[in-house]
Amino acid sequence: MDETDAPQTPAELLAILAALADEGIPLQVIAPKFAGRFNKGVDYVGDPARFETEFRSDVAVIAHAVRTYELPGNLKLSVHSGSDKFSLYAAIHRALLDFGVGVHVKTAGTTWLEELVGLSEAGGEALALAKEIYCSAFARRQELCAPYATVIDIDEKELPAPEAVSSWSSRQYAEALRHDRTCPDFNPNFRQLLHVAYKIAAGLGDRYLSMVDACEETTGRNVTANLYERHLKPIFPRI
Image 1 (tube, rainbow, N blue to C red):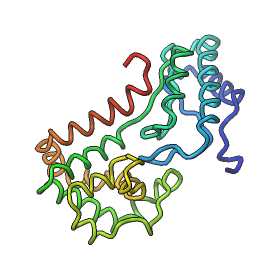
Image 2 (cartoon, rainbow, N blue to C red):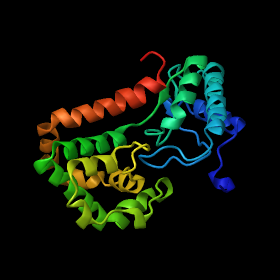
Image 3 (cartoon, rainbow, N blue to C red):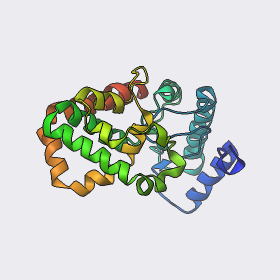
Image 4 (cartoon, rainbow, N blue to C red):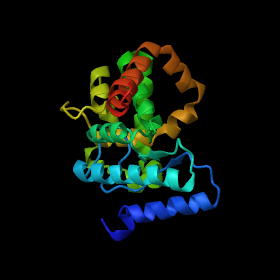
């Protein structure tokens, strides 16, 4: 990691907050840098102990800045690309308990992936649509990945060929995509590519949305379990 990628010091974060307060900006969220990699859709790559030290320091700085510079009392620290960082949630939970503050973790990307898991589990036309989305993503992978080059690590040699995916069962697709590192078939490369392929589903418009609705039992079950059991409950003290 070179110096341009290094986390800001507590003094630098405090100076940023002071400058924003001087401008009268009604801050709600601020997203400091942390050491390590926060790749899209997969767990944290780095030293969790170092992250906890940095996170607690930043939370303390924000609490001090709120008191000193009269910033909004609900100002939250955001962990950018923080969804699916399961190895960090215990540390975040401890800090929230100790400091009595909140945190912002964006979950749109992981929700979209769980919809795909649900479609694959539904089988039939829904599984066919999930396969179609991957095949399109594979063909457009350079275009889709370019804007996210700093927050994904995809080994193209580990991406399954579209021809192979086209013959997968519901179980094979779901197990390759679901973020379960204990599963031997989980493929983080497959998951990261599909994470940045949301615009393919967006381009399908009502065809995609209608299928998600039609498969509400499987899509809803997977989204709910992921958000509530794997994100909200481990992070927030009152859940």
